[in-house]
Length: 313
Ligand code: BDR
Ligand code: CA
Image (cartoon, rainbow, N blue to C red):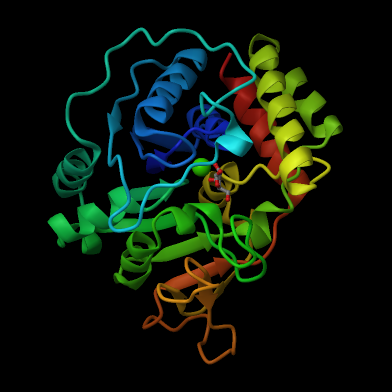
């Protein structure tokens, strides 16, 4: 079992990532931290609570994090996720109050309080909280088992021709996270654009759990319509659960070890993740702590998501 913290900004695909983590028998989700990204911090935090309520797991601690990026002005993705950040679905009201402690303080306390090498962090939004935690308490870096994040790309971008949305939201924070010495796996658009939720996939997900079918169907219908209008995708790439899936079953996402940096100064390339794929690093080289996801076993990925949904009862 993997002890996991999900740092997210729900968000349609973040919602599926939460359900995957909660439903997986191999994940112990000890808490969710939220970050302004797809929409404001208040909206995405409410959404995270409502998704846990939907899942029948309202006791999962949820801590709200940073409202703004480190340096740049905030951006959002209402053009994809709607005005609530999670349009298209009626979720139950959260029954528990939001945890009082700031996400960054909770991350530090939790990581310092547990055995070193036991906590996996899965960020599926901008990286502000994680960068802040590393700066506030540098000792967490050596104690985190690994970071498996959805963000970036070594091919094309989505928010700009070369930058992916989560990284572009806070490129300076991303640069901090990639440059620290903890193991980082980047699950970028190269992987997640293979996770298209086709109508057939959607039917299988809805069939896996009749209780959740309306919610999952509503999420995916809305997500599909905005991706068709805004990005000319036939079906929505369901990014965030790919990072959770890589943790549950690494064989779903082959990786390659290589240095990764973030462009912070380019007029056209701000927020681009630059993966040095010149094969100068051996896959077993311990000096290089970053690796990139290279592909996805799409069929087994969706089977994993369906299985997790079914287990949510
Ligand atoms: C990422 O951006 C967000 O809109 C999604 O939730 C995902 O985390 C994809 O670029
Ligand atoms: Ca997200």
